[in-house]
Each structure stands twice: as C-alpha cells, then as structure tokens.
Image (cartoon, rainbow, N blue to C red; front, side, top):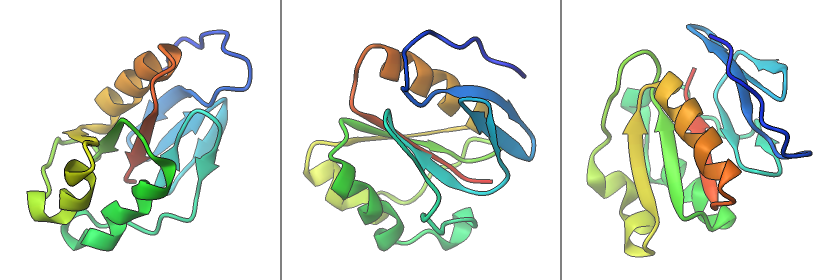
Length: 122
C-alpha cells in the first residue's frame, strides 16, 4: 500500500509498506528499522518478536520520545510490560500495533511535530 507523502521537508515519513518491507522517504527497507523525524536507524537488531529483551526497548531511551510505536508485522502482538518498564517509568508511551497501523500512526504524529519513534519489525 502506498501512503501519501506530506510536504514536511526532510522529515522521515513512511511512504509505502508491504508484507516484507517498508519505505521511508521512498527508500526501501527489508529489515527491522527504527525511525524518528530526523533519521532511519538500522542498528536496532531486533528481528524476532519472541526474542525481544529489555535491552531492545532500552535502545529507545536515547531518543527521548513521547511515544514508541512498535510495528509487529502483519499481526498485532504485545510484549510483556516488564520488557519496556524503563520506558513507562520515564513517562514514555509504548504502543503495539500491526506494521501498517504503526506506519500510518507515525506519519500522523510526526506531522503534528510530536516526538515519536517507530520501531518496525520485519
């Protein structure tokens, strides 16, 4: 599915997604990524939802987001709250949704100039 691109300059936005990829500013990614308004981060090594650990979630602390959107693939899945306790203890929201919903929600929030991070698992 293609998404409409808002004219937000260099802001990183999802421009398309499919079963095996996402596109950010028309660049295709076939592996897990983390996206915020200014960058696409390819160094987040989480690729297996069942193997997520606290350190996978602590990765987001350096970005100081208001909310982390976890795109969990074709199906919405939920991690145990103890894995992301460090985020919620700091008042950072963590939302789990299927990847298409995470892409759409991220685009809306980043267009509103919110401090959002999208973690997309592929």
